[in-house]
Length: 87
Image (cartoon, rainbow, N blue to C red; front, side):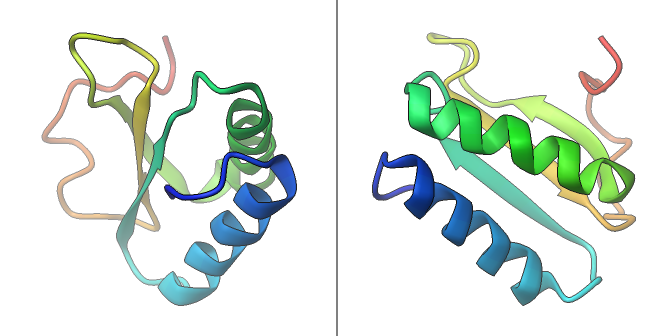
């Protein structure tokens, strides 16, 4: 999810991504999570879809918390990475 940094746009993009997965395994990545509107939309996304998130992975070494990936709906690679979901 990368584009507009406005809260409302990020919410729409995240829900479109969920609809595209349609219950199938996949990965949804949020960029610029450190931007307030993006971070708020991402936090709400995690709350709404907690049951479908298998793992959470921070992809940015230089700026932790900037790019976050969510393995969704039983993604086969969800357990191949260090789990950050419960930390």
